[in-house]
Amino acid sequence: MCKNGTRPEFQLAAEGIEQAHVAAKLFQQELEANNIPLANVRICYSPFSRTKHTAQVVAAALNLPFEGPQCKVVEDLRERYFGPSFELLSHDKYAEIWEMDEKDPLVGPEGGESVKDVACRLTRAVTIMESEYEGCAILVVSHGDPLQILQTILPRGLFIV
Image (tube, rainbow, N blue to C red; front, side, top):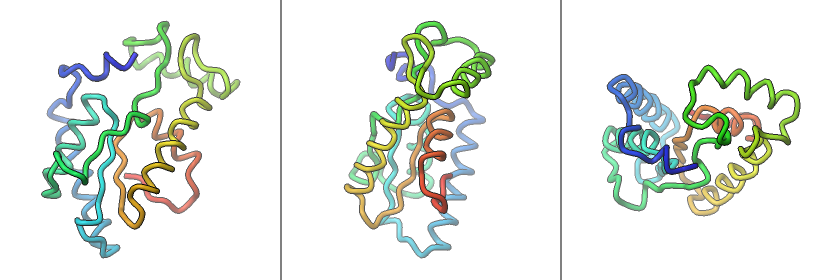
């Protein structure tokens, strides 16, 4: 399940690297606008190759050491597992999954995670990150589906890049 996403060939393409640089600039602007020093920044990222690569690009752009206490892999930020029927298939299949989610967010694709499953692990991740990094600005680097689910469970007013 998670092994596919951690393979080195799934790192960012050139366009993804550029997008990570843009995200870093936007994040830095938010930090400056809110007077948050870089010493109070933490980057938490999924263990998958593309999110780790994104976190590395952002950390470098912010002059933060990637191999240090300010950057941490968080297993619960991983991509949603869609089950053996959808694993490694085209993104075109997302519409089918989202239709299932709309019908019942408590039931996932066969052998995969439901919206509820993902929401539970993300809630656990956020709770741990907040307790470990109290008073810090935390940049979460995850994946589209988990981040959409995260946005639905976070209180309004929190900023997600």
